[in-house]
Length: 233
Image (cartoon, rainbow, N blue to C red; front, top):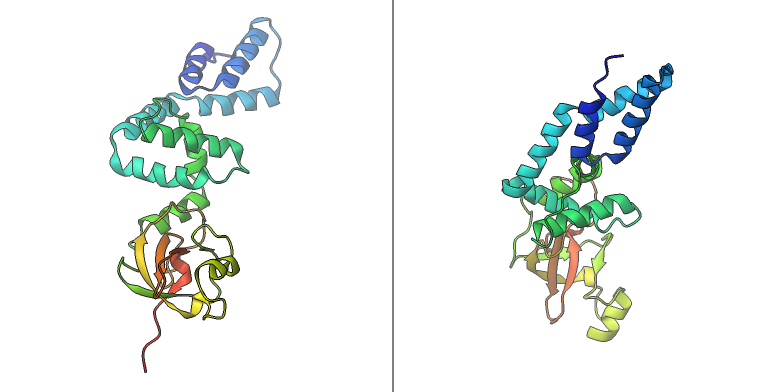
């Protein structure tokens, strides 16, 4: 057959693909015993070889170097990891995100494998998150804005609902939060949590911390849920 089991097994070990190491060893023993490989086995062996090629090892080594020294690469990884650590329904991807964040904070020297990183990096959700994070903000700290009536997400200073917010901090008969002017206290007040399409006019899903005028508390709202203040007549 002429397949270099030793080389690909070594590559698989470098890449942390222990399942591939087992498969290579099993197929090698089968071949050495004189048993013919099925078409399905040959196809699977080819896919494993591609996954554990010399090029894959080089890409993995480059990944480790860039995670150590490439600021832009590290920043992209941080943004994506902060998003995926909240997606607990995808346990494996959330675990990969946690590994990356611990590495970037200097709390660990352990990195996920390159293939694990690619799963959270090379997808449409990561692209949307990066688009929102890396496009310049539409609004600046100190500016005045209003919250759209159909705002998708508003974080009421840890209170949960608008009703609780007003009951504790304001007269319940006062205008709705979406009817008052707010000052922007901070841009990027928390990591991006939603992977939604970026709109040039409305913006994306970066978070802003706002202080409604006349109040001493803050709320957090996504960029896409903000609008210009009404012009005075």
